[in-house]
Length: 302
Image 1 (cartoon, rainbow, N blue to C red):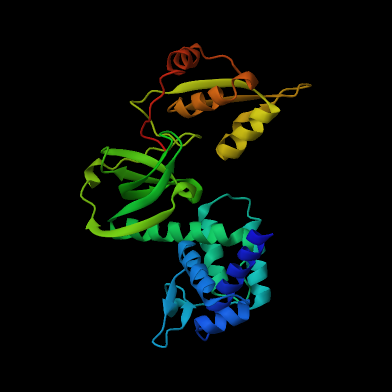
Image 2 (image 1 turned 90 degrees about the vertical axis):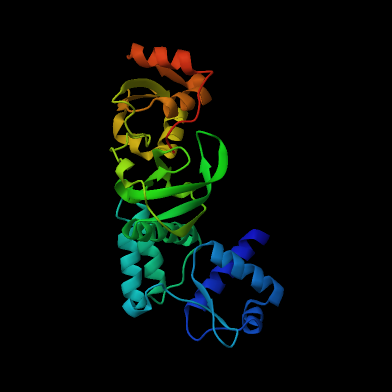
């Protein structure tokens, strides 16, 4: 309950700061029925969520959009309709998150708790899009890598987004490789003044359903039998697999058939649910799986 109360206060704070005029710390503390020290902590959280927090000459705070000159206001009814259209579009695009963020800035409706993360992701997409246009280098702060199982900063030259803005394709300077970075695993983006200098090495092949680009032109045919639990977990972690999975007739199992550029992601997945997944069909992948099960290293993927 304490966490829910804290979330509610932060959401109230965001709504208050989005409306003119700017507010003093004392005013916000009284309105939220909390201490001034707590308000400062909430302001830090608001900044971490990606909102542009400003302080005027009277030491009062407010949130503004990045392009105030292009401000377009929506009535509450217009904004609610637009929000529903965006949320029911059926696409899991991070571009939707950017649209939602702008919608909340430019309307009378208050941001909802389940859209705080979306506002943050929308901010990340906007920053990366600007860096791509300006051909600037960026640091992906505290990037969570599934393959290497660590959290680290990545210095990259952003190239483009994949379909639905789920991943960023970028050239990583340390490894000198083009990689795919999941937008949801980026904590923060820091845009640098340094311009891109490795454009001649930039490549952006279309990734497979697990987010991997082509490796030396090699491809692997995958055919698996999944339990219901394995199928649900796989679909949650890798939404793009859904069109390639079919339920077996009169059975509680599912068949996955697809071609991948790199088998490491699905190999790790099988290892985690080995009792609920059966490898079928491709001897090539079966041999790869047997040889790689105990020696999987990080590669140039997300």
